[in-house]
Length: 331
Image 1 (cartoon, rainbow, N blue to C red):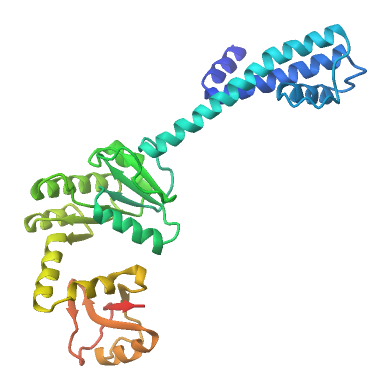
Image 2 (image 1 turned 135 degrees about the vertical axis):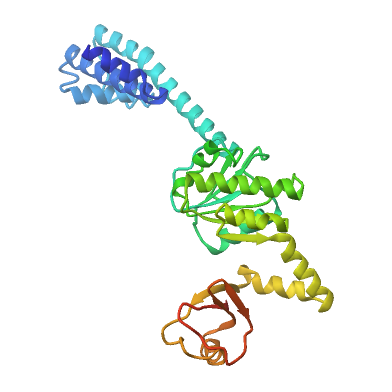
């Protein structure tokens, strides 16, 4: 029963591992045999194993070689058996490597990392987001999920592609959603706006079901679905159509404003907008005082966030309170 259990465990091993064990076993067995057959030429089992390795690998140093007829027969058997195992091993290893590489490129792999960002959907917005993240966040691990792509569309080494429907549990589980830090769900450009928003919210519900604590950013195209996205647990809702309309309207009123906004938001140009929590020292001071203090360190305050309310370019006498956040442009 013990031998049967060992044999069953052996059969459960991957093919490459089984071939390695067979090759090593044949090397040890033939190395031991040649030691007992020609003890003067091969005084220890180690010398026999060395000869077997050199023979099987076809290196053939010639420092050890059998001299008797039976020793040479052992050598012939080793060449026929051992070399065959080694050939199979390297062929299987090459096949496994190519298969794994193809699985990685075709999105059939499973991501094992943690604290990564999951991006759902493939379009120009996600493409530009990837470009920005990979140039500003270094080696941040990113998982891209899309059902329409056939191969990984980017060459960044830190981006893993998962092919599948993001509304299905198994697809998000292959992206290791349980250990992800954040998920960004973009609108499906192949659907109309209503159906795209429905798919986005369904993906959001699936993600929150598998990881309730994950930070979620979703792109919503229609005004009526914003409340549903928030009900489903979205921490941030990006209203793409509304943002675009604001830019277009401001460009009509003030020509060239769209380009200025892009420069201001462009991380690659060294600028970024973010919230920073007001310090104890800043609490009680006026907005005018805060501007004077931060401008000298190349930080420009442009607004205040208080709870759910945001105040852009408030009055200079606006007083900073505890738990306020400063909306700033940092260079």
